[in-house]
View (cartoon, rainbow, N blue to C red):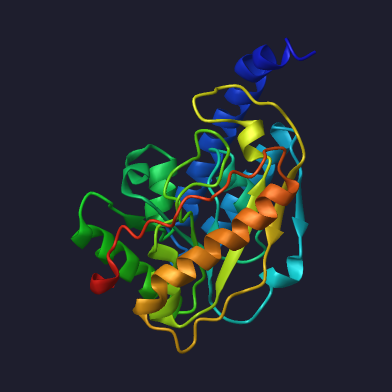
Amino acid sequence: MKKLLPWISYLVLIPLMAFVTIICGLFSLLFSLWDKSGRQQHAMAQFWAKLMLGISLSPVTVVNPRNLRFGTAAVFACNHLSYMDTPALFGSLPFQFRILANHYLFRYPFIGWHLTRSGQVPIDQSSMRSQVAGLMRGVASLKSGMPILIFPDGSRSSDGHVRQFMAGAAYMAIKAQVPLVPLALIGTFELLPMHTYHLTPRPLMLVACEPIPTVGMTTKDADRLTNRLMETIAAEYYERSPLNRPEPLPESQAKIPSAQL
């Protein structure tokens, strides 16, 4: 059966997922003609995500769901392992939110069109100025009451381990004075690792950790908060992951120097 899984992925699962993405993307664009709030487009994204998880035969179990339900905007920060992280998160988080995503994703057909029309937040990491501009757009969304989801490691992990975190999540949470919620996602790396194009179905897990309050913090606390965020996610991740925790963890990487925050 293991030998057949790649062929089933190539011939059935991946084409079906591509078809579902195109159809849902078209509906999302249609909804954007009259829905300026993005609510219907987000509902379509959640529907797409659940279809993707169903096709991949990889259900998600949410641990501590109470930490996902409170009445204020917040920054939700999750480790990044795989292209399947996005369906896992959209299919599991029970509220409307916006994502802070690399600007190049907005260039892709269907996915990029949905990101643009649904009000997602692009960030360009090519220069310090463009990074800060993207983060400030995220802060504006938070202050309007809209939660933000971000991958603080910036890109997928090539080996399944927790990578260095950048200070953007902490910066936005502090600037908006909203909670920072660590999310640990387990299983998506084994489901679809980087540079692999076939699925290995398995149960997934999303651990919602205790929110970290930021009231009273200043941007000088961003590095310390980033380290706490990474340690919290890593502790939950390695407790449940088949991988052994490396020692020491990589230090957080504040691409934006604290002096400029």
